[in-house]
Length: 183
Image (cartoon, rainbow, N blue to C red; front, side, top):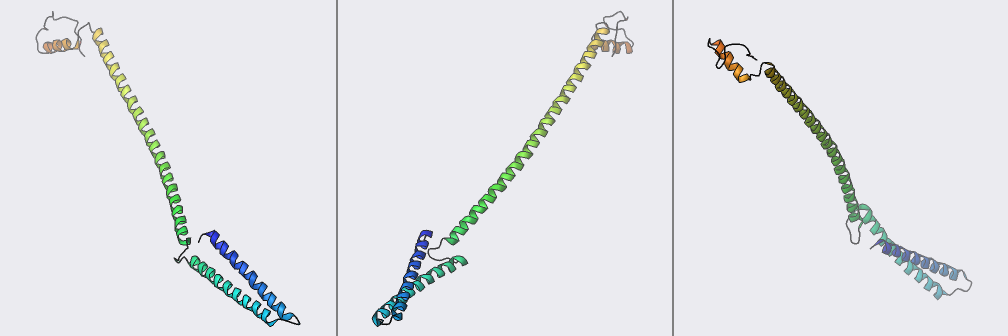
């Protein structure tokens, strides 16, 4: 039974109660007359008892239904337990979605921080590499300046000349004179 059917059943019970009360009123009215008709009073009384039995039966059905629904016991025609399970499932899904969203936000925050740190480390490494290249270039430039200031001999000639002089011999291709530079 859907909710509309339940409301219509309750309305039918209400109409039956009204008929029951009317029958009781007419029976009492008939008995209150000076010249009352026994047959009419009995007919009204029978109608009252019949309506009362119908009301009692239908109200008992509704009360039984409500007791089954309120205790959560499975029974025919009840969607209460299923609706409750569905509602709890939706609640669990919403909770899981919110937790996943929180975890994704935390992950994004940490991955952003990690990318920033990697970027800083890369910049730092590049700066160190540039400093090393600049130092190497400066050392090479200084070496070239020393070579040009030494009379135009290159480092290879100067070292071989110095090696020969230390061995006691004359430098090759030279007059044994000046113009030698050692590093």
